[in-house]
Length: 166
Image (cartoon, rainbow, N blue to C red; front, side):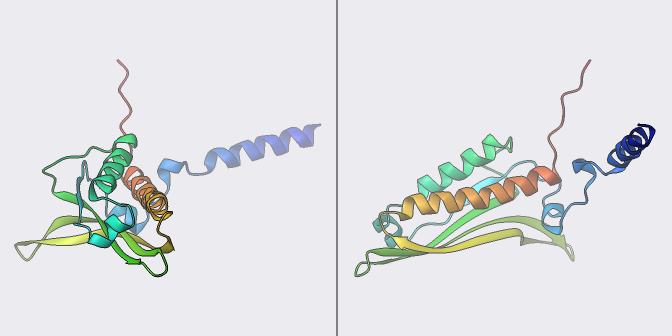
């Protein structure tokens, strides 16, 4: 019985000595997002093939802004940090299919040699294809996946502040 207690005590101390999630080192992608307090969302103008595949610019922008807000990340209209969404899409009428590349990236102004330059600091993309009737759902799911990655990295780099108890 004493041996079991000793093992339990040692195991408890080992667990307590493990670093917590908040103490984990940030990845390079997460480090680049440190200090960003809000994003301006910009969706590039879509080609006519996007409409043939049932996708609109407003759908992409609304889904992006909603994902940020649901994760407690503010959206602004005059931000220095811009979240870009680009959908490159091709409709093949003969195959009744759409081929697309969906990209999400974050750009911000950096100071270099006394000049401000616009730099991409975070970027992910997905290449997919499918029947045209399934593409709007597929693009929505792909965008949700990319936004989950961004929101997770953003929140790791900028943990929400806990309200102070008075």
